[in-house]
Length: 90
Image 1 (spheres, rainbow, N blue to C red):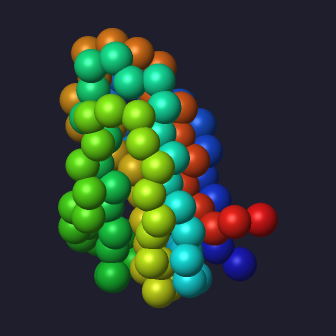
Image 2: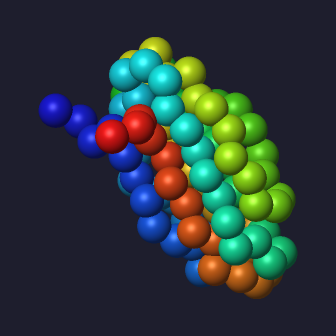
């Protein structure tokens, strides 16, 4: 069974683990200094990724999963430790 949650922190550029959200999930980000984090989804098992949302400040949002693969991608990092959660409720 694929992972349905990813949590951790960004202290530089990089991506979170790839997960599958079967139905409804959420994204939560906090600790922004100067950074850009992109929420991405893939419909082809992670070969290509599409930007769904871009975050430059703390925030939370709902995610309609529908079985796609999802990840967070910190594309720019100047400062801050960005703590993230992406996934389905427990």
